[in-house]
Length: 347
Image (cartoon, rainbow, N blue to C red; front, side):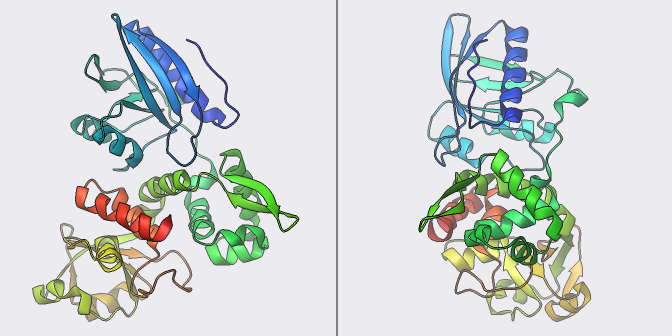
């Protein structure tokens, strides 16, 4: 297989691409070559490859992920698939439920073990019997774990912090001061942190911001959100659910569909998401909530310090978090609302 090096694509991604395509070639006899490898300017693409099998040739726009977890997957590829652009998601590891979901949605994928679903007008490859061995499951850096995700949450919202003291960043993020230097180094290695000129001096700035937002949303859904999840509940008073906008937001903020509805005026919530700052018991009493594993009210602990909001809606969590809640959902209504919110608040 022809393999181009790239100064922008990190080594993990290059290794994932090489292992996955070589395994696919071994299993199918296909000829695969890289046409370009890059991180396009905020377009979510890592380049393109050519697959030739049984005298049929297709070119795919690729996106490489070290690992996918939970119910999150790259929304950029799904959008391109809907627009008819050939694409291929390549990952070291994809959980079985997510593979089924990708296949159902006709999103092409390739796992390092060789398991894949690739369907175009001229080509169909489906492999689902290759065992995933331990070495194919990646070891993520700290950037995509709890402290790193909290760090990214503040620097994406307030990028000017990158040129403040480490102490200021740590206080805003609510993480240990000693972790900031390592997180900045990892952000640089991942290709998202750059140095430029600012009034004659050097300044740090985020590059490929849209791509970083997508990666943060996916990692938040997989790694941080489950740790902050308190549980599911339901309203005892159904009238309160119907008139949720009139509820006094004391001790909590709206996230998810509720915040999406407030910020875009586009969505009618079916599921309620609240990020709490008070005790669970107090909120259960004030909102008349009872625990219910199948309930449509999810309660999540607020993980960031209270501070000024980026919107006029003090009753909602920051737009970046609303976007993450909505874009990683399988609900098409939520993803469309997320796109509207991103255009209005994040672009």
